[in-house]
Image 1 (cartoon, rainbow over the protein chains, first blue to last red):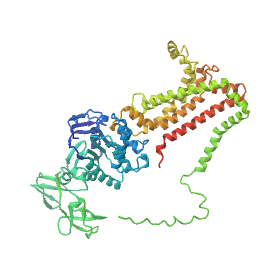
Image 2: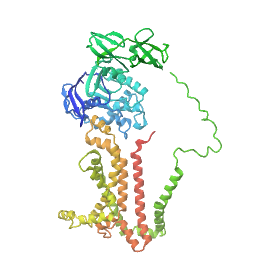
Image 3: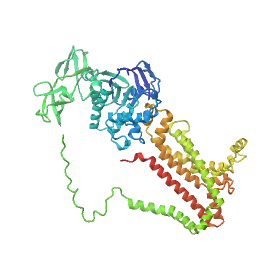
Image 4: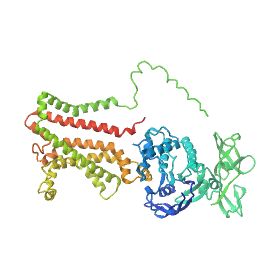
Length: 338
Length: 295
């Protein structure tokens, strides 16, 4: 099911949560709404579900205007951050809830066959008789997904689905969700504030801030061509160096670099820790404040002669100690007008 | 990938020092003192008077006991007490649940006032409540005169007993259900809505079962209170033996006649009834809560 948001607005008592968001979601797409808290991402998801009504604009499911369709008739599957399983029902009863309350009559045999299928899909065979308190968080979230899928939703909506789980479970479930999506091909929108999760999982990432779309594109597009300093900062660790641009050439701490297309004047130069190199010969003069060793490399915290603190990743065998003097070399960077 | 084994605890498998095996160390302090005080007061305030009651009733022979508790007047009083209490509890179930529901889920002007008024039957001396209700429902009272036109008599009938009972026991249901409703996770309801549930099926399948333990607790308290209510009822009931005389009043009448043993015998029936009812609701409650057990 193709979904289209047309200039959707939502205002809560005093503050505006979503300012005119327009978005097209292709049929079968796995889309991430990514943003810091308060960016309106959950509100957008809830409006698509019908758990909130839009104050302005329209939401289309295919060609049908779904803006005013109540949630129970909208045919969405919704997965909540804290599972929202019915505590007094077993896993199997939770999964069959949607079928039981549906207007479509199903025989008990039909329902239990469907429950068994779904338990297999979410790999929880044999746990149907347990109560939600008797299974782990990761298992609960898989039950919640099975329950949402049981009613054959047109679109699957997940609100921070892995937010309450610990890191290892989260990684497993992410891979598993990707597989299920591949298997079922159902249009899926999920909300997260975790950029790694969004980039890992989604076909397309929509980055939001303060109720507006800042940038959208494939993970490759948003990573390689962040449209603003906000996106650059939000997607991962980054260093900010101040400099200036004159006729396409940026100068930072006495070093000049090519900066095509940037307007003249003060500029902010952004480079990720892996975009910088440590050098003994030439570059921006800096001194090492701290060396942080990690399983996959070594990170230096350094201060430039201009007094700016930067972090950079170096190969683990680099010989360097706190207090060493040297130079920073910028391998890749993004320049935005200050 | 393998992680290194945890360092073996040196003390884990050591044999316990002499005397250590007897006394397990507790984490929470104060058990002997708090338990001692609690048991002392339970004994003094609850068990002792009840024990005296049982003792007094037991001093009758079984034949005399049976004659007193099965006399026609006593049986009639059980019937009117139990039936009125059941009716009052049923009324409170519906009305108390509705009141708790409204107080928790909606905001409206005067909500805090209504919330405070709910406790009034607890605070009001029951005799005052009885007199007020009698004044209202008497044939020349505000409600009574209006009801008289439709042919319904409340004062001096079992209906009056029911009204007095539901008045004094209403707060039990509201106050037991209210906190559970407040703690109910709103996403449960949203989840049920996204799954296509109608308001009715969400309430019946999703919410009511979760309220069940609290409802049962409120019901049993409300019913027990109704069985034992005295002050509010005697003013409105009319107290005609065989029709509107409640068991508590019958016990009181025997007491005034200095027939302490008969009073104790009749009271013991109330005691046993209340005890059985509380035991039954405890079992039902445990069943309603079985999902919380970890397995």
